[in-house]
Image (cartoon, rainbow, N blue to C red):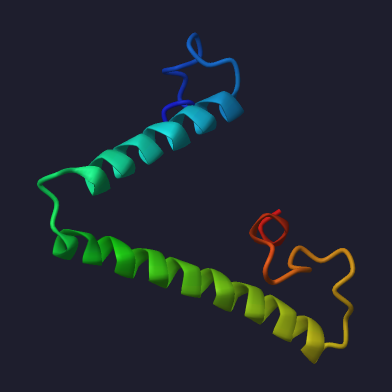
Length: 92
């Protein structure tokens, strides 16, 4: 990541600012790509497949965590994956 090796130390005050900037630029790029008049639906199928695979993998990771808790009789209190449907809570 460019921030880690010091290229942007003078432009960004923190790593969080760099990550917010990076996220915004990626969102802009994806929006421009998807919204292009030259784009056909078939051009977007690989992106759709990748997103579906990523969502499935995240769901399986949470399932594995909860299954291991159940297997060993532990409670989910204080665990990183308390609510399966709350993305922010599950990824903290």
